[in-house]
Image (cartoon, rainbow, N blue to C red; front, side, top):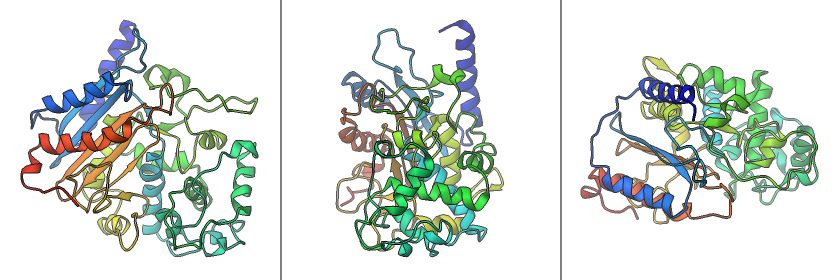
Length: 386
């Protein structure tokens, strides 16, 4: 890396840490945590990663591991490396904006989707509500490779509108990208602004998240962890920079995937969530709204966020409480927050480089969270969650 880039990288690291709202301290012995993540790099779970741990309002750990790729001359990853967040976009962008729209009476959770998108009707789809989309109980299919039949965003949404539901709305939980594609479109319809403009104005800019964006420019390519090469892109027009092909078909800006960010930036967002929606005297989301959205109710999921599955396997490991909430991204990213322990773990990596066939991340995630909890000594006062 040229000296100018080294200086810029150093400046960005400092700026990212200084703009994060909690102070950074060494509050626990991180040697075991270092060993676990470094071993994952050695075992090719991912080429590189960035990890931030927040505990009781303080950043107690913030460090990068490995490199951007497996090449010997690859640049090292650092805490300002930008990662494709994949489905973390659902929680960080789409759900956060929906929370604000609900608070301001611009969006009704119980309203049918057809109220905002009149074309989403017929074949039982007139019964789908906004809440169904957020809880993944809409009956829409999980995923479709739309590029096989569609070449424009309008064709994609027309295909969703004409599709047949897999189940009656509200009866079955099936994690669905399609539902969040619709939510992104609803946000744009209600506000008259693009999804990326909404997120930038409402959250990224006021929170100081300068490295968080959709469709990052080529000038930032040296900071972005690469993902696998798309060998199935069927179009002649240039493919937008995002791993998810459906997001690329939508121009790289979609309600289900497309956001890029750093651990340094996400510390600010997670701090806001852990502080009940308020940070530095500015309220982004009302505490009662957060409580409403994060309530499990009788569902397997909260509104827009996943919740820890009691009595079963969880990517959050064995010691996160049942009040925990989080989300995963296909590229290897994750955020898990435990309000009872006042603990949050932000983990970003590019496990899909060079191929998404690598699924070693599945066993690594619970190990990572167990190691964090153990390093903080929290296993001494809490039994494994069953």
